[in-house]
Every structure is written in C-alpha cells, then in structure tokens.
Image (cartoon, rainbow, N blue to C red; front, top):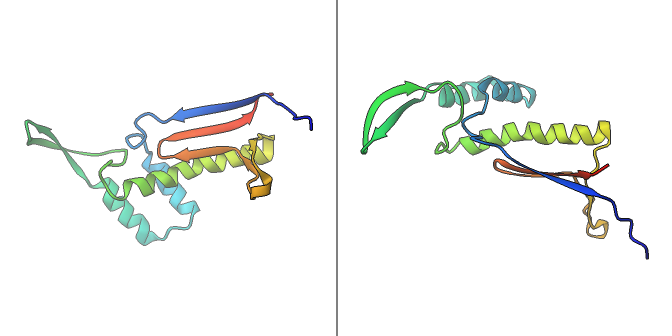
Length: 132
C-alpha cells in the first residue's frame, strides 16, 4: 500500500496577555449573536465593567482604579468569558475550511475521527493545514 505523503503545517498561537486583551465590545457582540438575554448582559456587564482594582504594595492596597478592558484572571467567570471569545476564532477557522478549502489533518476514520483543523486550549491554539 502506497501512502500519499503531503507536506503539512502546524501553527502554534499563544495569545499574549489573553485575559487582559478581551474586548468587552466584542464579548457583548458575541453574546448578542449567541442569543444571551438582557439579564445575562446585565450580569456580565456588572461583573466586568464595575470592578475597582487596587495595587498591593507590601501587602497593603494603595489606591483604586476602574478597569476599562480585559477579564480578571481570578474571577470564576473569566474562563467562561474567554471561551466565548475563543469560539469566534474556532468559527473563523471552520469558515476558512468551508469557504477557502483550508484542510486539516486526516485522522483515523475507522475510529470515527475525521479531519482536525485546529485545537484550542485556554490561550494556546494549534492550527493544522496542508502546506500547499
């Protein structure tokens, strides 16, 4: 059996300061597209838009500032919010696959696994494609 060997590429993306750079406007647009209710918008806006952040110096808080972007990394909601944003990246990759013929790596079809175009884990992403 002759194997068809094609040149392949794998891109690794590490999103720098991922939680700090989440656009609130983008988040609320995503929530609209996904059908989140006004109540959810209010809860998320309250969580994101009203926090006062203090800087600790030698264990003591010095002054407070209001956050204007990003997601607090210690916030229990932050990972879920970041996943919503990363879902946009996943959607865009799948759209490229369907429209422009971006092909992933063929996996073992006997095991019910087809083609893998990308893997997302927190702020790291792997994108697979043909090299040509």
